[in-house]
Length: 135
Image (cartoon, rainbow, N blue to C red; front, side):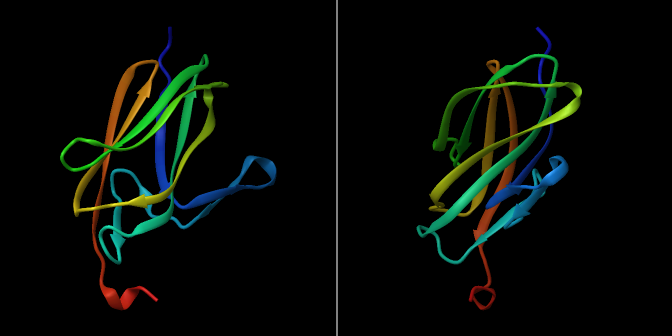
């Protein structure tokens, strides 16, 4: 069975579908692995956190996602879902959104994707931001 390929992972707050297969990204943090989330205070919830993936492949795939804390324990998890893919040259957008995300500590967090039981890992960092930047 051909393996699905992840072209990119955008970390943002949300997205909106537009005409002509376009997306508007809302609250853009960056493209993994070059993402650093600045929080006002550890232990306080971030309203939304979304992992928007661009995936291609010949067949459908089963996908689940975990977010691991710096100590490798599961912070967030989404159940396995079937993803219909449209071919190698067509990107399918897949979004996993989490509400009220609480980061308890600074450090490197891991995005763990399981696609047809094959593991793909990527990371992002969380640290305390400059208080003057939060309104």
